[in-house]
Image (cartoon, rainbow, N blue to C red):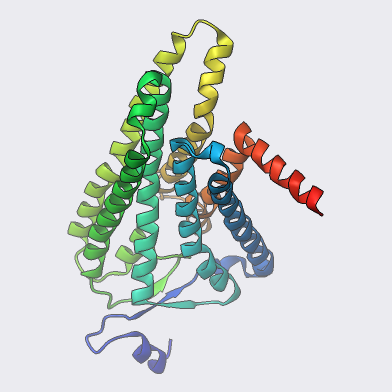
Length: 319
C-alpha cells in the first residue's frame, strides 16, 4: 500500500479506518466458479426462507407456536446470510476488497446478534417440544400467542445486548498495525489479531459471554431432550414413539448442524490447519446452515409439504 492509500485508511492518531480483506486470494483461478456457487446458495437461501415465512403466514393450519418460531428462524437466517454473502461475493471478484471500520463493526454486530438469537430461539423451540410431548394437557394453556411473542422478543433483546457488549470491547481497541484481514468477513478473532492494544481483557470478556449465549442454551436443549426421550420411552407402542419423536426430528437436526459447525469452527485446534481450511470452516455456520434449514423443515415436515403441494396445484390449475 502506497503513502496515499495509507493516508486514506488511517486517522491522524494512526488508527485504521479501513480494513482490507484478502478473502480467497489463493484460489483466484476458480473465482468465477466460486462466485456463481455463492450467488446460487445465497439466492436459494433467500427464496427458501421467504417461502417458509409466506407458507406459515398463508396457512391457518400452521398458526401454531412451532411454526411461528420456525418463521422467526427463517428471518434470522435471511439476516445472517445477507450480512455475509454480498460482501463475500465482492471479495471473490475483487482482490484486496476494502471495508470501512464502521462497516466492519456493523457486520460483526449483525453476525453476533443473529448467531446469538439462533441459540436462544433453538432453546425456545426445544422448550416448545418439551411441553408438547411431556405436558400435552397443559401445552395450549401455557404456549399462548402472547408468551410466544414475549419469548421471541426476549431472545432478540438478549442477543442484541450480548452482541453489543462484545462490540463495545472490540471498539475500544486500537488498530495501528497492518490493516489486512486474511478472512472474508469481520469476526472477533481476525479483528483481535490486528489490534495493537492489549486484548487480554476483551478476549476474557468474550469467553465469559460464551456461557450465557452458547453453553447455557445448549445445556437447556440437552436437558429438554433428556426429558423428551424419557417420556417417549414410556409410550408402549413403537409407532407412537416414532410419531411423537417425528415432531422433534427437524429441530434436533438443526441443533446438531448449528452447534456442530460452531464447534468445528471454534474448538478444533488451529495448529497445523491450512489457512484455506480455517476460512472454509466458518462458511458452515454463516452460509451452509441458513441454506439447509429450509430444506430440513420443508422436506421433513408433512404439513409444510402438503401446503406447498396445494399451492403449486392451485397455481397450475389457474394457469
